[in-house]
Image (cartoon, rainbow, N blue to C red; front, side):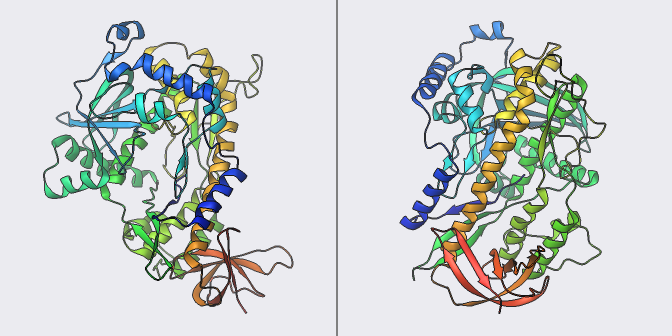
Length: 501
């Protein structure tokens, strides 16, 4: 599920900083790694990647192939050091060859060790508007396991063949040693594509990205270009809300990750064991609520136009459209993980979970697995090991099969914590945005009403600034425009509340 990308431009007020710190403590987000975890991570980093020079004598013993000749690049936000993926795209004459290198965490993390136990406790990297709570210690996530440029790194290398229409024709995955050539930001990659200076692999990535977007639409899938929101201080002491435009290359790059996840799901189905990422179709009530949000933001969404057909008309650089795309993440509720081919209760004699005939992810329009972000997501390490074993004709490692039944619950708990943190961060940010404006009136649309008996509350979306918050009032006019009054905006209480007389 895509999350809101929130950031607060410095300087961050003491009140906001304290509210975010209190929120992390409330949700028990670990502030640091225990000493034994740090020690084990540092030892693994020093042993397996000394000085950034890979020990080729170890390759034969591990069955690791040398693919340092592939001119991979990473494409990430500015300042990123936890680099999970590096990509190279070539022409095959009548199609394309996509090579996608993924950080090989299983090389560094010993099953059952201190790092392994800690990442199972965390589950995911949790991102906040001011900082992040990483899944792995920095010695790994920003050092030895990260695909930093100019460094030999152990990786899992996917090679995927596509025809001229972007359809999958072949796929393989092996352990490899790779060397990324360059760390590009999205802005640098887009500028090179726009001014014609991009090297051929980057131009081909754009071609493949467009083709895969077409295939996605044909499958009935939907990708959201969720823009980054930034709360910026103004000279008068107030705050403003700005949106960073989503660049086309971000969508094309994301399609490479989705492509790999689709291939991984196919491999696991063939293997008869694995773990898929699933998502049911959107709840009609959420779609109706989103239509009301569109009305609040002045976005024309005709009744005969389906949601997937609306998205190409939106531009993330426009504040109202950006706000709508943020709200559209509500359609991605109910995502989960399905482990199959192993006993549900994890016991040796338990009933084995069968994979349904159709276990697709509704937003992607295909069966899909998480395998491309192991630095930031626990489950990817396990799904990747299953694919490697299947591709090599080997048995899936015992430590993977042992953990598989419990992974959906572990990831669900981590996801709930991350979502709760995200929602509360939005409340903090919006309270900071509206601070000092209590008593002012705003144009809004009532997008949701609590249907419980006697409840006189609901949700409104303002047009400017694009805020969604609670509203109290009798007989709230669902779906209609209204003038609402800001009754409360508390950063410390993480509360924004309006009233409708």
